[in-house]
Length: 118
Image 1 (tube, rainbow, N blue to C red):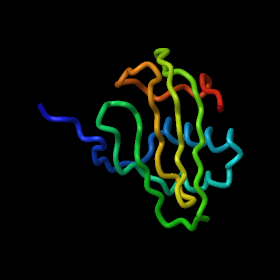
Image 2: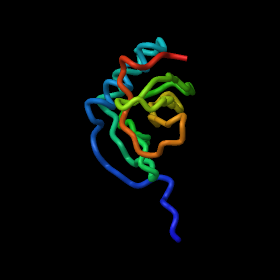
Image 3: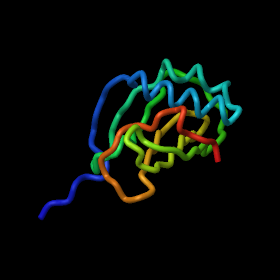
């Protein structure tokens, strides 16, 4: 029996929903200074379990050596309770983690209107 890889390589631009979610998290957590990174950010891998968690890479951007964990709680479009965490490492947006709180593996990105900052 083979195990799913933890992360699967995937190279693409951010989707409109991912951009909106990242921007919302930055604004709601008072870190709008990082919004300029979104246009320079691409997806480099995704979680192998089927959840919408993605690893990110910011190109050609200077940063301060800050580390942030910005989070919110809410619901997926079909009502699954989810948590969202935006990781910022060395001043660069690095991961958008979206996980279910009830163990559901495959689900969509939460609706911004159904999220609350912790």
